[in-house]
Length: 568
Image 1: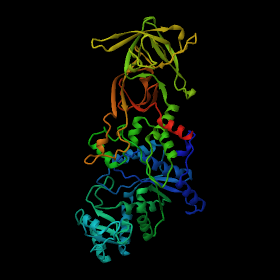
Image 2: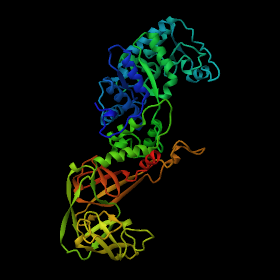
Image 3: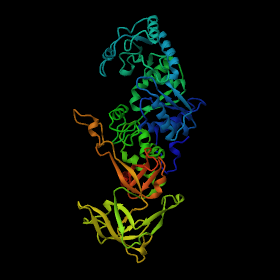
Image 4: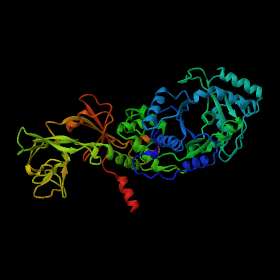
């Protein structure tokens, strides 16, 4: 099993109060000789996103650190929104992130036991069947400043409640006509303790149990008891569930079952990112993105397709730690860890995204040669490759200006530049089409500068990447940017929605890029650094003879500069 502390990077893991709690429980043998047991409990109603990655790293990583175990449990109590597709994607994402569960569980595995516990609470006078509508229940519950009002059905006899609940289970009543509620305290300052709903009637087919059940437990009733069944010692969830902790404990205490504990930590919020499943689903359904795995999406399948690595995500999650206060993390911090990881692992290659042809007039026609280039300067073990060079090459359009602005050090008439690992060239003239666009630049080269070094020691101020025109391969390049143009996508004008903050320039597709021939054999999800351009990976849309590359990130690392400034 992999955990956030086993990365090869030298990253100091920050203090983590959850680790401190578990360490103390182990020291005092709170659970005797039992191993630490955690669980990751997603609802299968959507794809996992980067926020879930933090929870996964905590649940699996802390258990592993203390020699414990972690279950993957699907809280599948809402059949109208849950699908097998989501179950499959979640399992795939957890494994991709580098973790393996001890047991695969479903809340639906426990429907029979939960039903028996509901009967136990009814017999103890701790639960009752209520005929109020959902709207009336909300009204009777009261407000944050005022107590609730007892339902007129609150004092039904045990016998009547048992009869009605069994008939609910047997399908005798329509959806919404009755619920089972816990009988606690309608004057509690915590609204969650004001007789919360335990079961509702829902005639819907469940993705696992089919039509066996027409009553389904609410999350607050199913979650703690599922933890108890699995003997979860440390049930970790985000801070929005802090107000639910009393009801979590109440059910366990009333039933006298294994005393699982709930602990809350801050959820991950990122700038320029929405992590609401409902809103992500809206983006998919309304086709603002191509699907859950669109590389602009914050889903794990989306960022994986974009080229993010599990190692970088685990390192990022370890670096942000866990606190009891919600905040927002700059997305550039995540991007920093990803660049750092790819800088160490990604193979280098040369690719020209906006090609401009250059003809080296004094280079012998028909001659070709190969220059030796390191596959990754950060990793000598990655070896070298032979890159072809010829009389005609491609450079980036931005690397030439016929009329250069001040302090423009790249190629222009009369100016000498270095071709990376090849030769010095000097621009002499241009050819233009009928519209006046430059289509070809004519240059001369210095044969003595092979390898990019001048024998007389003269200096040039610019080194450019290039691709040999006769050997170049074509590829589709997808340049991804942030999906939202605003740091807080949830901040919008009255009468608008978060959709008003969508970035209209989040995707640019290039069809005319030219790449060095070594990339012809690139595999799906393989990572590369296109020199001077950015980090890219091969998209699954690729096919033989038709490569598609996604830009993971540009080379610029703003967060590294922020860190350096903060530490100076």
